[in-house]
Structures are given as C-alpha cells and as structure tokens.
Length: 451
Image (cartoon, rainbow, N blue to C red; front, side, top):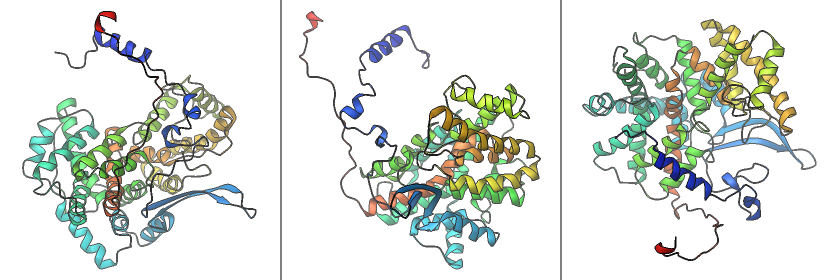
C-alpha cells in the first residue's frame, strides 16, 4: 500500500466533509465566541496566572488612556534587556543562567550557577544505543518529528516516568533540557546521511561547553566555532527560551499537564505545536522570502523592493499567502524587544561573516514594511519587525541548516515549557477544559433504507 496516496475515494470523502462544514466567520460574534481565544481587538483571552514571564506592549498616558509603548519582556519580573546586558558585560554565556532563573524564580549566585551547569553537563548524554536504535535506524526528513519521537521513546528508559512530583518532574526536565541539543543535531546528521547521502559523523558532547557551544561543536565536522558565533547563538537561545503563557506551545504545555500526564507526553505535545509554521517555523519563512526576493528583483533598487513588498501583501509574490514574514506580532506593535536585541548582534555577525549587503537589505525591508502594511491593510496599531525577522538571518550566517531552525527554537523553549509545567503542577486545580458552542441544529435519525 502507498500510505501517502490520496485515492479518488478519499478525495470524495474530503468533498463531503467540506460541503457539510457550515461554520462561517460571522457565527463567532453572533455567539460571543472569541475565535482563537482573541477578542475583537486581537487581545488574548485571559485563561490563567503565571509568575514566569510577562510581556508589556501598552502603557497609559497622564489621562489614563491606553497607549502603545516599546515592547518589554520580563523573565521572573526582570527585564530581559537588563539580563542580556548583565551577562554580556561579563562576557559569559547566559542560557544556563536564565534557565535557572525561569525554573527557580531567582538569579543564581556564581556557585549556584556553577553547580547547575555541572548538573546539566552530567545529564548531557543519551541512554546506551539510543542514537543507533532510535535515531540512526529510523531516520526521518523532519527534525521536529524525530525530536518528538525521541522524547516519547525516552519514557521507556525512565524508571519513574509517571511520577509527577515536583522533584521528579524537575529531574526529567533538566535531563531533557540537557539532551535536546544532542537529539536535534544527531537527528539532522541522520537525515543528511540517509536521505542526502552525506558522510555521517557523530561527535560526543564535551562537559565543559555551554549549550550554544555544544550545538555548534556537534553540528560541525571539525567541531570548531568562533567566540562571537557561540555568544550570538547563546543570545538567540536566551531570547527564545520563554515568552509568556499565552503562546501556543506553552499553552499546550499547561493544557496537557493539567490532565496529570507524564513529562514526556507533555513535551512531545508542545513540540507538535511548535512545529507549526504559524508558530516555530516562521523564521524559515523569512529566510525563504528573502531568497525569493533576491532571485526576483534588483535588491539595490528601493522602488523594486517596495513593489515586491506590495505584491507580497497582494498575494502576488513568494508563497502568495499575503504576508510579509517577520513583520508584526500578536502583542507587540511599536517594537519587539527580542528583535531589537538581535538586530545589533546580527550586524556584528554580518561584519565577521561578510554579510553586510544582506544585512542592509533586511534593514531596508524593516523600515519600509511597516509603512506599506499600515497603508495597504489600514492597520493603525503599529507594526514592527519581530524576533523571527533577524533570527533566521543570524542562523544563516552561523551556517545552521534550515532543517534545524525550529529544533533550535525547541532547544531554547524547553526551558520555558519546563518552568510552566512545574508551575501548573504546583498550582494544580481542575483540568483545563474549554467550552465550544455547538451551532448545528438537532435533527432526527434516518433509517438506512430511507437515506
């Protein structure tokens, strides 16, 4: 059997399914339902409480009127801009430090951080034969699916997988945080070898390396990287580690955790959410959009760039989705603090890697796009470059393959997911169970002979 074949019978069933779907956009306001858990103004519907992070995009003027402001992101109440400035001032890596902060709600002392890093290094290994049996023997074309499968397989190697006490969940979380770089990179090497015919090499992690250094050393055949490369990748991990409880994958973590299930199932569900191009795959779209732009127009001509951006919105360029990828955010309007921080680092890396011309093109689009979107879409809340706009460029300059863009997002976000899972367990109440309004009228059963 060809498992991917859509037969005429299946196509007919799909037509029946579509013909019998009568839910139209006008029904949502009619029944006072906030589609996508967002109200008519695009604000998220409040579904829970958290101490882990906060996003600020609005303030109030002297008269109490709500106004937009420069976006701010707080980890455990501390502004991310201050956190980044702190570890960059000391010229050290930050991901392990903010993982500690997210999990335990306080900044570690020098000794606590050293002990924590040793703990992560000790867990940075996979069970015997796991790489051979789970990754190399069943290679796949999508790294996120291999990552999910590997996480679920780790359940079988855990002697207490279903114990959801805080201590056991923390142990499992720290192990997964440590293992994720290995799972992601080894999956990519497996794909390269078995599907693309490239040479296979598997490096062992070095305990003295940071998470960012580990990724680069495992990924590259010679295991080499520059200090700037490692520091910028570390910064990207810090900025992707957490973003409030309302994003899709973190909300998934809360929902699945509330059922009382195990850590591996919870993380696999979050990975499935992050895989979606509307969530974790957006920076890949940014890179491919720019590749299409460079192959379609003269990118030194600002008029041609402007015309291309208009055609994107008019569904007449690239993937014809009507989007300028990397521009705009559901919450931020005036600015995305993560994008602001990454922009400066992207410029430094562009100089080291000889990407100045491409970086200049990104800057031009970042300047032009908000005005064009505002004009064509009549949007007045403000639009700015989001974190995906520069992260894709940074990954390209680091030589990271597109196949690893979303898995590296997961390597970072597992810290936030873990913190939210522990928080949900500590404040366990009722299972999260939203309500849907049924809009189909009641009808009678028809006997088989009368159909």
